[in-house]
Length: 377
Image (cartoon, rainbow, N blue to C red; front, side, top):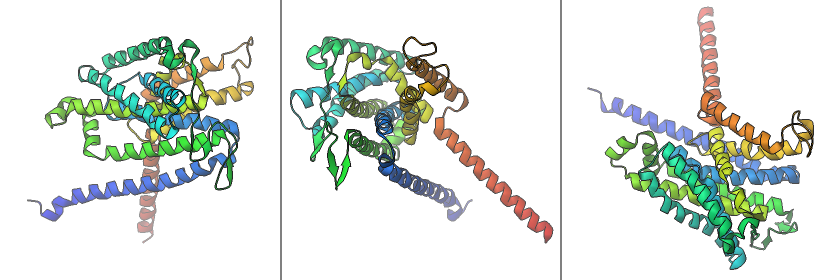
């Protein structure tokens, strides 16, 4: 029979491993955050505006990762909740004069409410069937947005209000914080960065709680999770609520940054774009949403800016080659297939493989060095 100290050793090893992982995550987060805070001071307006789209995409992608990556519920309806968030911001901010400190979270709450109403469909459907239902949700949403002109402005769309709080006017390029001047893009960058940081902290902590472990149990083995006492209804609906909330917030920021949106923007292609974000970055990871958004959200603006230098791209109307929009869609499809086949864990998985390879290489060199010393002795 194992002694208590021997029996407890695997537990202590597991605890030490988790502590090391937390410390490593902390040491990686701090440099990334520091770089993120100073990055706008070294970039021009094009790159700052591109990073704003990246951060907003990461917020919505993080929400989809909670639903698909952590809970295993396949959804192609993220565009619908983005639209709900954008139009909630328009109604509250422009029609009723609500402050942005209220209409940004309210956009998430309204989307979360609808997500909670739609979530029960996941109790009877899963996999391909659930994906088809969420596709239908996008088309139903577009139909509602087009015909509900008092809310959406119809097919012509409507303007989205600009945030204004704490003495900052996001519609102006003349803002100052602690004597440092910020233009409109800079303000949106830091606002999106702040919201993304809060969302990442929340999701990171959620995965360590009993609720987070229940979500992952549903993803891995739904029947086994139910036998262990996991409330499937609560877990699935809760995942829909969290995902929809983050998508609603992302939609409000997206609409405000564009200043004007129309129903056709919230289409199936936008939903597929968010699926591509989590597949490329890493399904079921916190950092995967940000890494995937860098590739997916940053791709089209970069192609448009450097189209003159890239062969086979159509540089202007009437010229031969592939249009930038079509090229972007093709690359999205190739990336999704490539990562699903080669590395399902996305860029996070590639990083993990590289780290494991570096560790094996270091161990092998250490053994070779030790063997050399023994031979000399």
